[in-house]
Length: 365
Ligand code: PHE
Image (cartoon, rainbow, N blue to C red; front, side, top):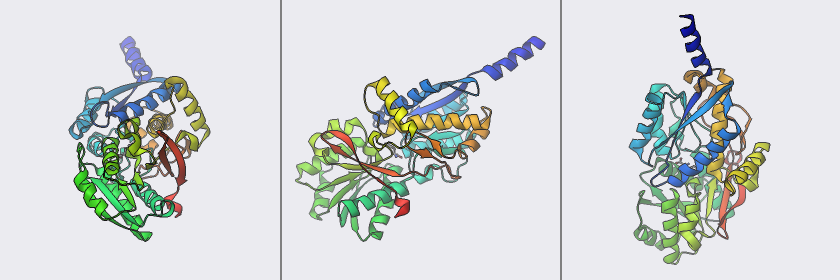
């Protein structure tokens, strides 16, 4: 009996801590999944343990689909018995998966879902990124002040909570600043935007603001240039993937987008360490999605350490008590709603590369 007790005890004490990672590894936004995973992998390699125990990561693909986003969360909880989850990427996916995590009382920490509703009314779902009221306001300020735009054409992907929300927050701020706008709709997977673009260009906008993800943004840019539009194109964090440049080519040259991080806008000591290690491991410079994945892992690990045990409820609580944590993307403080408050970076595509432009703090405007 004693021997069994010792065995069971040692299993409990020395068992690895399992964390689920749910990402879009295939499908429409697979580039985001790949980038997040690289950031998480690097952080795991650098800090593989917590509370003297090894951390095991269990990666599950949501195939860039809403139904799979929920299924994948159920799977890591029920089958793999994880104590916490890092994920997902698209806000629509974190909304679907987050509902499951909340119901099953397993903490979920998204690196990059920015729609406010992802954490609203929840105790178990938090994030290490800013939310879209900030991002949308920062884009509006940049369009109005820096691009001197007075009239904006706002393009909305009706299938993405992220896009709908971001467009709304932009509109509100842009109007407040004295600008006006009109809207056009599209949906994920569309390839042909000439109807919306023709209609929009007839109204002579000063800027095209495209909220959505890189597959559609790159095609939008190409078709807008083909129709003779030479003005500025502005997008959100959903633009940032190498695919944007691969598919968009010359058409995305000069495109601006708001985001979370740029290696040239270095924020903390950890930023330097992260950039150096990332280049060493992958041979390329990291982007926002890599840095956010890296930070999500570090914050999760920190929360487990603060909780003092691998207990889901204690971890969920500790995540929202993380204050002034030096991450790759900046100092991270998670508020009581589970959101991080951070400044917004503006980048542009210059000579086929993502280039740092400026940092905007909408809260101070
Ligand atoms: N913010 C996007 C969303 O909520 C996801 C995203 C973040 C995409 C960062 C790219 C970079 O859906």
